[in-house]
Amino acid sequence: MSQRLHIELDHIEGALLRVLGTVERRGFALLELSAGKPDAESYALQLTLEGARDAEVLCRQLERLVDVRAVRLLPELLLSESEPSFHATWLKS
Image (tube, rainbow, N blue to C red):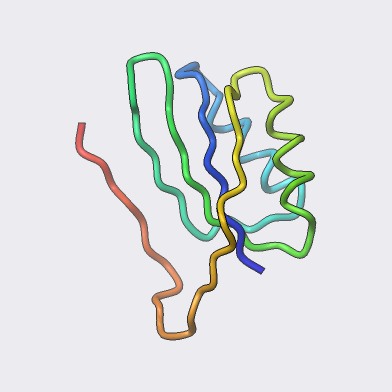
């Protein structure tokens, strides 16, 4: 089952790596990552994940990370078989 998370985190060295490491260690596969920089001190991420575990538990675990400001589980995402299996969002600075 696919899940989407919105994560706000501090713009601090290693913050993104800690988030992605936690996601992987908790048994979720990363399908898509979109990132934005709303201001000089933070990042906003949207992750599309696949996994059989409870995404709400993952949200609580991510909230415990020191650089994470907020985590929100977005409405369920249904991926159709006609959609490409890989796509990325690139933002220009």
